[in-house]
Length: 106
Image (cartoon, rainbow, N blue to C red; front, top):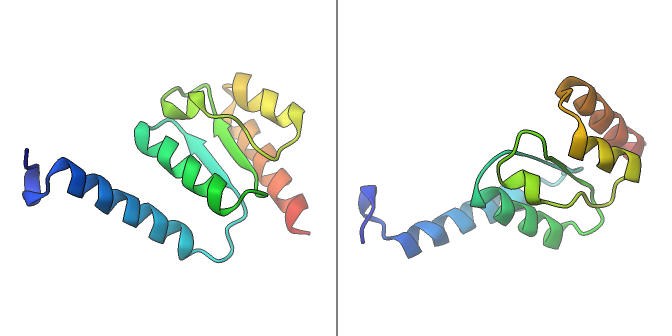
């Protein structure tokens, strides 16, 4: 079945995968991944990031729901991981994420 623009589903998925790979490969100073909400594409991006940068942190915010709610935090402190799972105070969580990244960059 062709989608708008003349691409079929397989072509569209291949195109999206290439776009995601290029996005990750073109950012030489990536420090972390932050996942919020989303659908299946967030899971694909999580896996690509994890494969390319196995030692970098991934911060999935679970309370907004979506696909990010099913993802596991990686390479982060257990207290921050618990906060990502439970807190709906996103401004506070974001400050803790930024502080965690900043400490790693020192």
